[in-house]
Every structure is written in C-alpha cells, then in structure tokens.
Image (tube, rainbow over all chains, first blue to last red):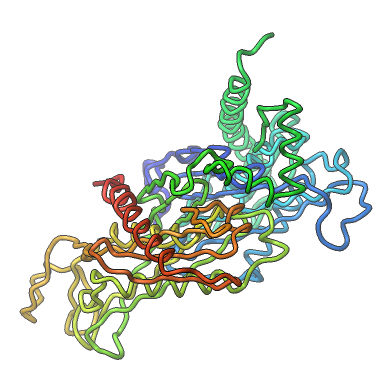
Amino acid sequence: MELLSPEGLRQDGRRPRELRNLQSAVDTLGNADGSATFELGNTKVMAAVFGPRAAQGKSSGGRRDADIRCEFAIAAFSQSERKQLSKRDRRILEVRSMLKEALKANVLAELMPGTTIDVYVQVLAADGSIGAASLNAAFLAVADAGIPVKDLMAACVVGLVQDTPILDLNQMEEQMSRGPSLMMAMHVGLKKIVVFQADGRMPVEGVETLAELAEGGCQAVGKAMRSVLLDNTRKLALARGPVRL
Amino acid sequence: MTARVDSAPADSQAEAFKRLYPDQYYRRFLSQNTRPDGRSLTQTRPASVVLGVITSADSSALIKIGNTTVIAGVKLEVLMPKDPPDQGCLQVNVELTTLCSPEMRDNRPTEVPSFLTQQVDAAVRGSSAWQPQALCIQAGRAAWAVYLDLYVLCADGVLLDACVLAAMAALNALRLAPVDVTDAGNVVAAGNDAMTDGTSHPQQPYALSKQGTPLTLTCAVIDDRLIADPSSEEESLAATVVSTTVDGQGHVMGLQHAGGGVELSTAHLQQCITAAQDRHTDLFRVLSSAQPPDH
C-alpha cells in the first residue's frame, strides 16, 4: 500500500507537513501536584507529577539536585490489538529512559537539592508518535506542578516516506514506512535540541531536511502547549482575585 | 494543588493541626455533623461519566466520583468457545496506575487490584443483564470474548464504586457488530448473501442487556458512625469500610465488610443497603444520560 497518494496526500488525508488535531489540558487529575493530558489525533496520553518532595528511596539522600524518577505504562486497550505490556518490556523501558533523560535536561534540578520529582506517564490510546506525545504530556504536567524549567520543551516525530519528509506519523505510517524516522524534542525558545532519536538508513543530507521539519513541528506543538499553559496561568491568577499590575 | 489561593496564617495553623493530629482534626468536624470538604455525613460526591474517550477501544468510559478517576476500555475478540460451547467469555482486569496516588510507586499495594478485579467481575457476572449466551456467534465455532480493562487514574477513595461504575458504563456503551461465520470458519460482517446457515442475527450493531445494572456505594465507619462515599483521607482514618452493591431491582449483589477490628451491627448494614439503593438511583441517572459522542 502506498502511504502517499499520487496527489501527495497521506492515507488520513493530511498533507505531508501537517500535524494531526492537537488537544491538551493541564490540571486534569485531582491527586497530583501537576497533571496533564496530551492528544495528537487518536493518540492520548496522561501524565502526573508528584513533587518536588523530600527525597524518597535509598540513594537520593544528600544529593545536590532533585532526583527525577519516571514511570511509563501503556493501557491494554490502547492499540488495535489488546496487549498487556509488562513494566520490563523493552519498549516501555526505552521510552521511560528517554523521558527521564529529556526531563533531566529540562528541569532546573539543582534548585531543588535533596528532593524527588516523580513523573508518571500513562498512554491511554496509541496511534503513533507515543514517545513524543508522552514527553509533551510529561512536560505539561511538570509545568503545571510549578517546577522551574529551562525552557518550554516540545517534541514531535518526522519520517521519510517515498523520499518525501512527513510530519507527525500515525501508527500505520510508523508500521508501514520503510524509510527513516526521527523523534526530536527541543527547547523551543532557546532553539536547542534535547532529544534526537533517528532510526533507519538515510542520506547525510536527509538528516538536515528531517531535522528542519522536526524543528517546525516542535515549534508548532510548543505554540499550542504555551497557549494552554498561559490560559491555565490566567485562570489561576484570576482565582486569587483581581490582578493588579 | 499547584497554587494555594489561601495563605492566611489561620489556614496554615489548621493545616499543621491536620498533619499532626489527623484523627482529632477529623473528629472535630464529625462532632459538628460535617466533614472537612463541607459534605454532610451521608452526602455523596458528584459523579460524571464520559463515553467513547478511547478510539482504539471497542467501547470506553472515563468516570469520576469526586476526584477519583477511572478509565475503562473494552476490547472484543472472536474466539472458539470451549466449555460451554454456546457462551462468550469475559475477562476483567483492574490496575492501579502510578498516576493515581503519591505513594503508588514506592509501596504499590498488590492485593488491592486483585480485590477490585474480583469484585468487579462478580458484579458484572452476577447481574441479570449478563447473558454469556448473547455473546455467542455460532455455537461451538465462534463467540465474542470481552476484555474489560480498568485503570485507576486518580485514587481518592471509593475505588470499588468507581470501578463498578466505569465497568457498567463501558459495557452499556458496547455495541456488538452483527457477524456470521462462513463455512470455512472465517468471521465476516453479516448481511453477506453467501450466508446460508439460516440463523437470524440482528443486522444492526446491538447492545447487551441493561437490566439490573449493579452499582456500588462504599461507606466508612468512624466512631461508630457511617460516612457515605469517603475520600481517601477518610478511608485511611476509618475503622472499616463497607461496600454495598445493589442492582436497582431490589437485590443486594454484594456486601463487603473487611473486618478491620470492628464489628458492625445489623442496623448499620441496613443503613448501608438503604444508602446504596439511593446512590444507585443517582448513579444510574448519570449513567443513562451519558451519550457516546457519535450517537
């Protein structure tokens, strides 16, 4: 099956450089210090942050920065076939370590010595780009918890299909595409790359093309996330009474 | 949680008192016949049901009781029925996600999910609506297998109530596609002219029976008084909790009292049942008014 029609449209009707419908919200769970949902088309991810709180666990005492811990899980009904993935599944561990490393680069952990920040991410529906969606949800939850960060971090996935770069791959495109793909997360204001995971063989010049498209994607996702965070901040500010400037 | 709007010193003193002496803090409210969140002792929290939130599931529901949040998803598969040959099967699984409470990662309770799984399973199978024969496509050859997965996303008390509500919401929203089995044993969409086995299947996607929907109310017992729909804080202070499942047709389907070093009087039990019947009316109304987005 061709992923791109002769007119250059994708199976779901999108143009190659088009994002799916993006929806996100913060403060979606009552128990957590910060929480968020992030939806990209049919992909839906929920994240919760607990902390910063006094160091938990054995090795975290006496640290000079905050210990960031991540957990990642995928619901059994999230994919087209029901599947229960164990906590030690390779795919789970891979995303978990990516989330942790990305947040380490993003959070100003040295401002919170001797604390633990727990970031939990649960995929509820998986239709491609789940790593990027999970990182976006995690970042929103971290921001919602009021944890200081370096910059707004946004992530997206791009790929090369029939020599055409495409943005925001869905499940089918991820599975059917034989071309290379790239998951990138960046600090959108600083324009610095935080995560760069490229898979598959591609010409050297292709890296630049994909990275450019990914940067555009991250900027677009970042813009949407910023407006959600701003709306929430406005709501909180007004809850304190009239704002005096 | 993120922004504390109140910062008056009186509040922080109350907060300190609450942390140091949670029992006394709570009992002061109790002596005034009220609770820290402003509810009366028998008042339940508002519940909400949203259907069709997960597009990858065959049916799904996101439910809330106060802060407690549970998501339920149903996946259908066609299996060869084994024993008995004319019945489909059901598999329930409840999981507590790490998101659901701050303590979940370091001391994850192992017995709570099993208890919830077993209770939800019993509630679904015990209801008069549950007819495994209705899941049969062709006796001995094909039947629906219903996988019901529940994830607790936020735990603030009454997990069983929330899980049962989510399970019933997802099962009520489930539509089975009309299918037939070909001679070669393949399952195809019904309405195919090649079908000659003469069985009459409904041609529209059909729902399972909704009679006698089981719903649960949990009550906590603190100082010999019943507290309806306790929060997680109240559950941790309670001597015991009693979960009553009723079907809205005058039957009690389950009554769990986990002991906890407290004996209950039969008057208490009667009170629990009456309260559960009232709660059933409430929850059933919420359940019936929930519409899937496409319908």
